[in-house]
Amino acid sequence: MKIILKEDVHGLGYKDDILTVKDGYGRNFLIPTGKAILATPSAEKVLAEELKQRAHKLAKIKADAEALAAKLNEANITIATKASEAGKVFGSVTSMQIAEELEKQGISIDKRTIVLKEALKELGTVKVAVKLHREVSAEITVNVVAE
Image 1 (cartoon, rainbow, N blue to C red):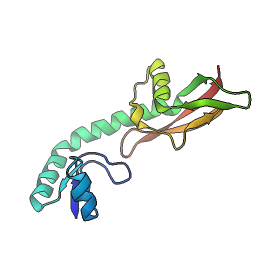
Image 2: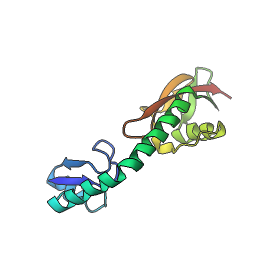
Image 3: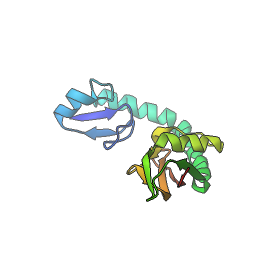
């Protein structure tokens, strides 16, 4: 089944991508939830026209994302949390805590753009990826210390 994504779907593709998926996945999940529409010839023509009109806006959005990525690559944040003497954190450091610390430094990002491969459960310094745009990502240095 050929579909056009209406929003980013993690692990599948980005908004306005034309993809081929299994019939059941498209018919039972993507289309009913509004994440995709069926890729008919007329829908593809409409999409092509929309993309042509949005090209200028998308270039500006990408430039803004690259400027933010430059700031984020230089950002170092420290998060103080409760931890055991062995260096294990009670609970874990979340993307929301990282976003709040960045906000204190004057950098505003959505917590959903922070990609934590695994929960931060130990003290130390870690590089955390931030996905700002489909082609732009940055890395933040996060230092987890005991309170």
